[in-house]
Image (cartoon, rainbow, N blue to C red):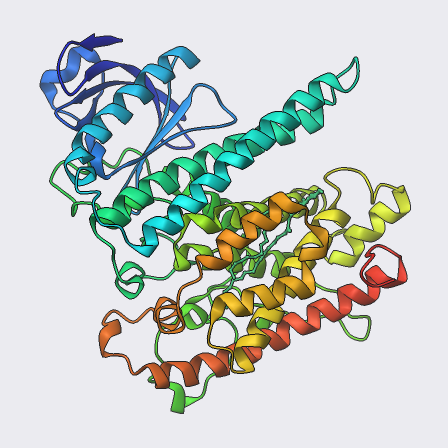
Length: 480
Ligand SMILES: CCCCCCCCCCCCC/C=C/[C@@H](O)[C@H](CO[C@@H]1O[C@H](CO)[C@@H](O)[C@H](O)[C@H]1O)NC(=O)CCCCCCCCCCCCCCCCC
């Protein structure tokens, strides 16, 4: 590593870069200079030209919370550099240099932080809450260490992971704060997405918490990655993980709802473009077993709604949802045939008396069920004519999740529900037409209502069947 005394900072050195599944992590020579991170085959091949590069101002830089060597430099939908330093200390140096460059480059925009809008005030509240959360989580870690001679490692792991997540969210929110101040964008403009989530290779209109993607300068001639990493981006993408793990035999379909010719002019929306939907899940007759694969696929697709809604405030919710999907996916993969239905998975734990074990499928599914019940109530409230989506979220929360949450999580919910867009922006966000401004909102709403009806019917079928099973086995305190 060679720091070069310059302002903004310059750094060069070898990092291992993820290439693909054949070649894995390969050493490459990286140069951070003039706001760009470029890489070369090796230090002695610099004259041969760089293999790729990224405009640091436009990139999200993340320190992997689980791997102390790894950092990611990502321009959402464009360039993914998954990197490993040779030591945590070296990673830190790269992070500091990249972060410093980023803030240098953005400081001109940041200096315009004079606009005192509602958005900023709300973000300030979020920041305060995240600080409280940090204090609380540090306290929990302290407790976990002190409570007995042998610290509870699992509790420690969970709390430290949460602490990392909170820090990430805090930082993202700070970035959003700066960006709201420099250019408060109308949500309808923010969520413009020409290709929807759920399709491979889609360009996320806005990744969670990445304020920068919103204001990213358009791709410059330097934002490129010479195709060394076929599929590497997908393989490292959390969403892609679920698609890949669950989707081995799945054909693309238009959310399984049959539309006749009269629907030929259907507007593209979150629902028409989704690959997996609750609407298409078929339960076994007459037992009502819920197919594991299809259910988890539909849940993964649901988690993508938070990318569409696009606020960092939804990050903890998405993370929790994906965490439970991951737990169930992992168990499913142990024996796909045996665990082809959700009930079979839970029954297996009942038989082994492990339903109450940490990370059990039973517990993960219980929380998924609660989340989906929340969604069900949220939609119901909207369908009943409530146009204020924060109200819908509050109502649904009171009916489903609130009683299971302590004050910290209630605070997180409050942030998330206040980040809900207004009705029109919400509808526009669900619309995936390229020229959203030309779309007749009432036409869109009519279509969405039809799609939502079959979506909700699918949710109801699954929830009913799962509730019967959970109730019969005394696995859900809400039902007994
Ligand atoms: C309307 C938008 C706001 C969405 C807000 C949803 C409500 C979120 C409530 C706040 C959740 C904060 C995140 C973390 C919470 C967890 O602490 C909590 C408990 O976690 C569980 O702990 C167990 C151990 O005790 C552990 O074993 C288990 O694995 C773990 O999960 N988790 C929860 O409360 C679950 C929350 C899931 C919420 C999913 C909501 C999905 C609904 C999406 C609504 C989108 C609205 C647009 C709809 C458009 C039409 C499709």
